[in-house]
Length: 143
Image (cartoon, rainbow, N blue to C red; front, side, top):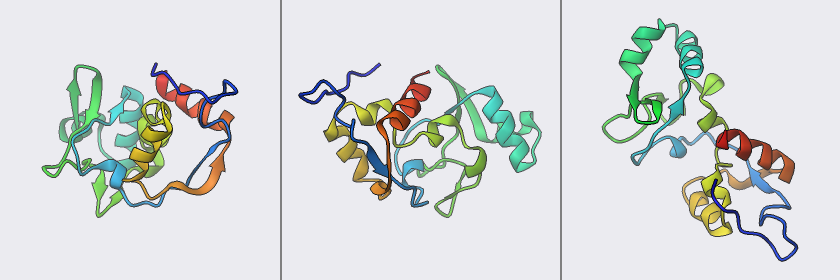
């Protein structure tokens, strides 16, 4: 688990919470190489959502790599589930997508959060997530 910077009082740097409201821009879903990891259960849920048999869905949209199952990418590195800047499976998207931007890597340092926010207009916007909410999401992502 990545080490999290602490404030002088010993609390994580984000102990007062962080703001986020998804803008639906799709920037977190492409424009550079990456992986969208999913479980077999998530893959099956997504296949059902798009009305495809699981085997066909996997053959068409998913690849198996060293860590597990991940969506394929388009030639421009967009996720195959991104269409016109919108996620086709938003309602049943994998955990990795659901917990963005509260990934452990974005929570290590304020600088990591700021770096991620340069590509995401929803970070530092919208409602404030309480420390407890952030920790629950971070821990869910860490498994």
